[in-house]
Image (cartoon, rainbow, N blue to C red):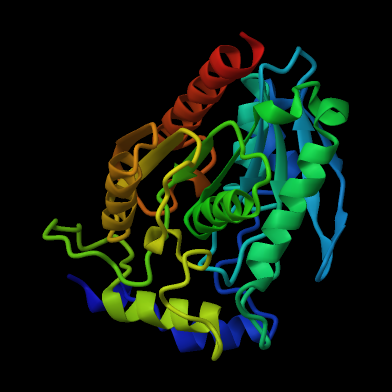
Length: 309
């Protein structure tokens, strides 16, 4: 294990709050991505911000020219600290899914910076979901009951939390849930897997620091909305989880899959070989493309079987 691959959470937060993102990338703007991947040229992208209870919630809609066969509300990750609608895990993933027949609405959310803590991001995700399903037929032609939800890492946490909040309030649930390398427990579950020395780590102390920052002073580690892995997930819709192979947080995704299955939820879980956490944030990478294809096929199949008959 290489300690220099262990991030200093406090320094990272201070840099973000000072307006400096240590992970800024310049090769991932929309024009660059469309030049690299000509098959994405026909995907229409429209910014469609909504007003949530905490202020504006940036959202973006993606549709291809062909008839859409499924629809997804998608939430990016970033440890509740960073990320936006332009990062590949949001923008490129949505472009690729749309090119495969899945209409996508991407959501942003307030980050755990400058005193913002849980449940701000969860509120934004729920408000974004509510707005998307309210206009589902308008933006994608799929009935409201056929809209899926999903996310990556912290976004997977927020997506699962939205489903639990909908279930608790008796509101209609999504048609299905797709989660990439989910981050849904307050502690990293025990694992004895070897992680390659050149892979960034999520060691227990890092996860505890990130979660403490997200919760703030008033949050509870056993809150099932903050950490859906602490919930009774019975009654949730079908779930597909794709984990990264060389990822400390893979143990969280695998444990959540067992919890879902034990509760009677239709659950599929797989591992993308050779990948580290965040592999969907790499435009064009073969493993990222495989995961996107897996998601698209699962979403379209679920929509055809459960919704459109």
